[in-house]
Image (cartoon, helix red, strand yellow):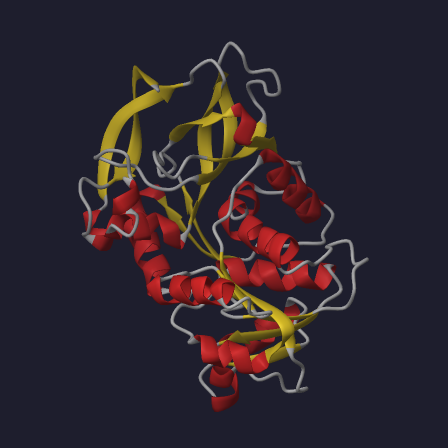
Length: 332
């Protein structure tokens, strides 16, 4: 990545740890796009839990981030202001959505460079904030439901009973909507204050996770779940096992050491019930698909709160707190 002499505002951290206080407001050179990249004037940035988990050192063993100082965040929307010489699909002035590499980040800034292959045009009906909310959170939900839970989002598949935990959060609120597009019966868990919100997303049954029934993940109708989209860490396997159908699968979106061991054990014992740790692989096709759903009114990005880039540490803190309803957006 080359740089030019113009400066931009950005938020970065210099070392692992530090939380919101570790974010520093700096002026750095505006990056210059390489041959197959576009330079964006950033209009909206979505914060995902993986962003601050990288800061905590969760992926340190995999050398994330590649170097310090590090400008975090990867899910951004904005306007193309410069293109590399081999870019064919975009021109200056286009409104686009992109996913930057986690290894390098670069999103929490006024400008960012993005690979043409991971960039998609935003329809005029979709705002920058609605678009920026999508990449990691919504594609995680879509791919977990389709690739592992076996759901067909055009509604042509067999009726499936789906449980979504933490259904009012970033991934969860998309998972409920997409599962309903797939004609599933959706049971969801959330806090009491968000029950009506999650019902409004289309959930058929909603459990307050603080009640005994919610903690036990028991469907009020007594249904066994064909698939669980688990957005909550720390739920023991036994809780899922009791509520799964004979070949039920749990897609674990917050895998830790315990869940990885359980997953391995299920494979070793050839269990029909499975726990599958899941990490999304973002592709342009997925971004275009989701943007089309939003354009058609079949999917909505719920924005919990918006922060200016000068208040990025407040957005960071709110994400770490873990009680956002929908997505947290930073707008330079």
